[in-house]
Picture 1 (tube, helix red, strand yellow):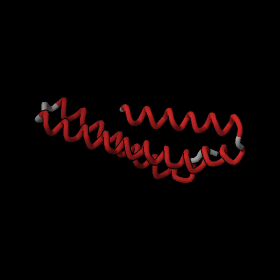
Picture 2 (spheres, rainbow, N blue to C red):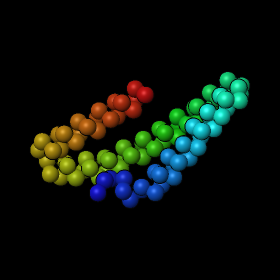
Picture 3 (cartoon, rainbow, N blue to C red):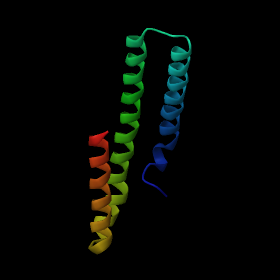
Picture 4 (tube, one colour):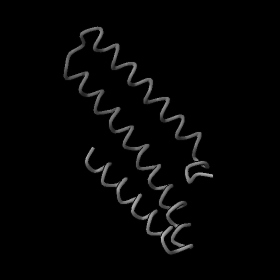
Length: 93
C-alpha cells in the first residue's frame, strides 16, 4: 500500500480537473485567445499540479519515510535521500 492510497480518490479528482484545464488550454490556443488569458490559465494548471505534488510528498513523508525511519539503517537513508531528491525536483520546477 502506498502512502497516498487513503487519499487516492481525492488525488484522482484533482488530476482529472487538471486534465480538463489542460484541454481548455488547448482550446484557447486553437481559438487564438488572448495570450495573457492563456498564461493565466497555465499558471492555474501549474498551481493545481503543485498542489497534487505537495499532497503526494506529504503523504510520502508521513507514510513511507516515517515507516523507513522506524526500521532505520540503509532503508531509512534511502527513503530520506529519495524524499530530498523529490523536493529538489519540485523546487527546480
